[in-house]
Length: 279
Image (cartoon, rainbow, N blue to C red; front, side, top):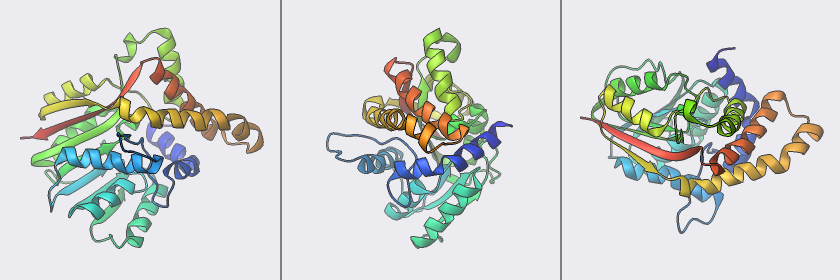
């Protein structure tokens, strides 16, 4: 089974888990951003959208590509809060169907559209977007360099790329044995083929042509979400395995929930935002 099929299967079988995580009908599928005044888990996930949007300095009329859009939560939030057009892509037919349904219910079908496409081969015309937004989806890409090339191609002049993601603190070969053991179990459970360091991605983005590329470490703000993921995975492991009798894919997801936090506590990865511009 190739990587794309693995990811499709993963999100089909684990959709219920992500729906519980999102906590609302149009459910978010990412970490939250916890600031000084953040009070709830759901508020933290909305904050993540806000932090990225403010960094991008979104303007009315911007055309945004949400690469790896899930069920459309961020895309719909952007359309609700800014006068923009958003195109979301996902390789999951289930997610695309849900996202279009949610957009229709919100009365946003004229400004938000979703397609089943691979962000490594998105098949849009050159310079189609002012912004390429990728939130915890790049981790699923086998060829992250290919995505960067495509993002650059798709951006208009003065367009911006933003990627919020898990990044290793050192390139994978430089991790010690314990770090590799933890990271491997996390990646396998969540169907992630590999992770880069933020610096590796920054270097590649600059070679591709992006300028003013910067890295912002927000691990402190996202670690409460990582801890909550761990707590849910650890506390529900036995029930999921022996009472609910979850499938192997679903149980691997639970294991990934546990090991991502252990790898974080060991200092093997950080949550960072990378942004850049096409001048």
